[in-house]
Amino acid sequence: MSAVSQAQQIPRLAHTGRVTQLRVALSEWTKLRSLRSTLWSLFAGVLLTILLPVLFAAITSSHWGSMSPHERADRHPLDIALAGVNVSQLAIAVLGVLVITGEYSTGMIRASFTAVPKRLPVLWAKTAVFAVVAFLLMLPPVLIAFFASQAILSRHHILQISFSHPGVARSIIGGAVYLMLVGIFALGIGAIVRNTAGAIATFAGIFFVIPPLMNILPSNWNHAISKYLPSEAGRQLFSLTHDANSFSPGAGALLFVGYCALTFAIAAVLLVRRDT
Amino acid sequence: MATMIEAENLTKYYGEQRAVDDLSFTVQPGVVTGFLGPNGSGKSTTMRLILELDAPSSGDVTVNGKHYRDHAAPLHEVGALLEARSVHTGRSAYNHLLALAQTHGIGRRRVDELIDLVGLHDVARKRAGKFSLGMGQRLGIAAALLGDPSTIMLDEPVNGLDPEGILWVRHLLRGLAAEGRTVFVSSHLMSEMSLTADHLIVIGRGRKIADMSTDEFIRQASGGLVLVRTPQAAELEALLSGPDVTVTAAGPGLLEVRGLTAVQIGEAAAANQLVLHELTPQQASLEEAFMTLTRDDVEFKAAELEPEEAVL
Image (cartoon, rainbow over all chains, first blue to last red):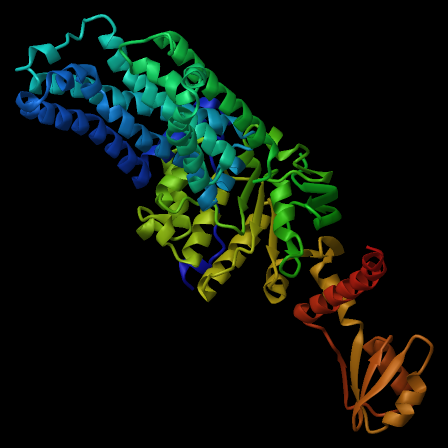
């Protein structure tokens, strides 16, 4: 008889612990780091955040001589340094969505909710782990992007700006905070929509489709409405200048955090109520 | 402490569709309880209701005296293998089990132990998406046993397993029950259940049809048919005929008798000096017994529903 057909004793577990929020967070960390798709999205985010500013800085530097004064005046060193944020936000958002919809599409969510049937600890743990990872991973790239682009532009004094210049440090670090919040917002949408394609489409609609549509509106409407959009409110975190048509960095960030909180309130209610 | 599953008037609608219909049952520890029904009869739904993955439309179900959700260490109470895949295809078997274990503070050693136990040692670091159906079942069983649960609930565990795997599951279930655990296992394979289950809960269209020991189930469903071979068929037929007895000729010198036991027939024949060449009580296979029961249920339901549907 082979070993497999013998009646097997299941080894007893010496100690069974209770489910705690911290343990669920550790579990979510294991889930996040053990998926290749996660690592690729993060890698893409990091790469884009660094490479685009470097590329733009190099192009600006090499074409500086042939640029008109008007064109030159339009160039701002922080726009160059943070150019990557606009693109890598999509990678971070996709990852935020996948953190939760990936569980629904594969059925993993049933295993997760069987282990943690109260469910909400899973949502909180996913969000906390993802937020910390996104921020810690995106902070070095925005800093590198700033100093690298400044180094490339060192010949052009007009494009030099000091990190200690008022608002610069806030904008750079704000870029990383913004990316983290975008990821959190996307995760919340993923938890509501539960379907990868649907959630990414919803996110793209809110962040990339609605804002340009505002330009169709009469400009005084546009100015009145646009600043309340999540993308515009969040953008204030990494904008150096603010005018009458935009919020201050603090107010913008607060509004964006408010949108995230609203998304999570809806997600939390649905998560507990819906069948899985 | 009582370790059992108790369902009371459990009902679940998905829209207009009634998946589980007023289902009440108790699953006892120390035995293997088979949960039988044709595909779509509500077995998987019932199991999801027990785990509170789905909320019942009405009724209630508890595990070890509490709602599953209210247990401090759920994986220690119930270990479940669901029919639908519950594994992220991009994650390795090892990391899948580790992530589940960590929610309860269960260590890596336990994960390794179970991977060895279910025979996935060589593929533990491979992505679960590349697993065959049988390997997926083994991984699901490992996940179910992770928390050393007092109740094990497996939905169609032998699906996709090779004969060796089926034998392994059979021994595993028997062993778990012998340790005093509550074992609740669903299947549409009656023959498999006859070899594994001590007790059966049979459902059809979400309703309970039978709740009895496996032996009792087979005996009832076979209808007490006795095969009698005799050169004096006509005389015997006349002798046995009565109000609750049916005797039919199954061939020359061959009778099928219902309503009397083999003992009664043999003694009646001897008392009247009739010769018998064969006297065999017929045991219906579990498969046949099950078909008989569910067919009745389906016909009954159809007859009952017709007038209502006509009104609608």
